[in-house]
Length: 133
Length: 199
Image (cartoon, rainbow over all chains, first blue to last red; front, side, top):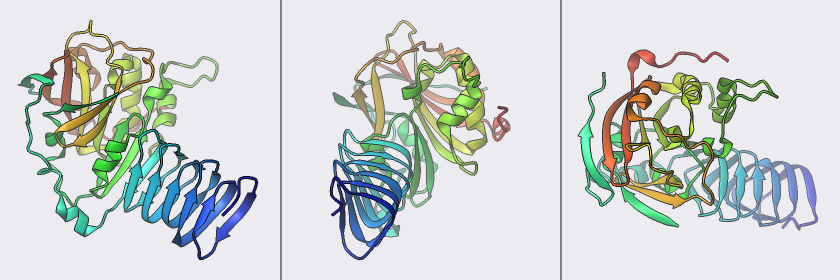
């Protein structure tokens, strides 16, 4: 754990899970482990990890080999690459999210057949096709 | 407060794409959980561009930034990005004609011949702003959330004017919603895409 009064500038590497409550600037590279940024954590670094959980602030690009979760108190500015990303209600995110859930997961669903088109709802009053010129 | 609204057009937005096709999506507005959750089932790249947080957008006399330059900064899409799906939501209700033109000039190089787009307009100009922001819940449902405060610059365009303003898109379908909003489905006009912006 990196405590709330700790400031680290540089590269963080290792082979165990990490909880950050302090400040980190640089690079965090824990490819096989879980990196958690706690509510008081302030990270200005690119993060590479198996799982990344964010409750504090992160500025930088994030790669999660398994998943990235931004909790309701999380604030992230950067680009995320992960098979799966979860954004909780209230979380703030600015950037891009690149997701690839894998072939098996993709085959389970189909964009076109997720639900049939033209499902009538109380919100719709009329439909009219417009031929564009 | 959140509410689920049915959509007759979202399914058409996704129909042309294969389930295992990689999608590049431009979502105008803040990142919302349901849009992330929806696309997490697919190979996708989402760009969240919150134009709403920059309103009102107008020529900045102090910095001398043109509208095009401002939109280029706001969008900040990588040069090689080609967008498959644009989720405009109701952003055009908050942009004047010059801003729409500037926005499209920045977006145009990122469109391709099969790009599709979804948005909201209004049928009755007297309607007040909905005060909502949106996300995709499923291919036939939209999640609407109430904004903490109303946004500045609400001045929706008549549908005929909006069609002229969105000159790189065809209006393929339009659905009149019960509160005089219009849900619209757009496709790119092949001859008007890919042109570079002039800063």
